[in-house]
Amino acid sequence: MENEVNKVSQTTGSSEPLRRVSGKVWKAAKKPTHRSMMPKTLRRSYEQRIREAREHKAFKQIEKGMRDEKEAKRQAHVAKIVERRKKREEAERLATQQEKMSLRKRMRVKRKELKNRAHAKH
Image: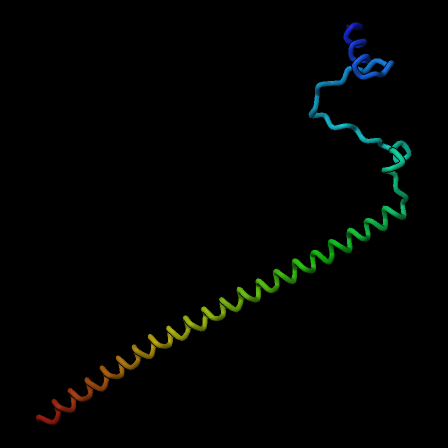
């Protein structure tokens, strides 16, 4: 074992022997629990964090507004299509109703004529 550590330290060029690393690659590296323990590059002031949060919130609000506008346009388009379909169906219904009415009227007139002819013969 000691021999292996020496080999590793010789290949890396460091006089300090390397530690054994766990083979558990699925374990995420733990982050510091306190900000004071974080590296200086990752530390940000409270004002900076608040400013970034505000910017993020504003961005999300704009994004939501754009999404809502797009959805409203889509809904208007769908409503327009539905309205057009309803008008067409109503026109078809009225046309068929008109045909039925004229058919009924023709039948009525025909019956009346037959009655008149029958009465005329007597």
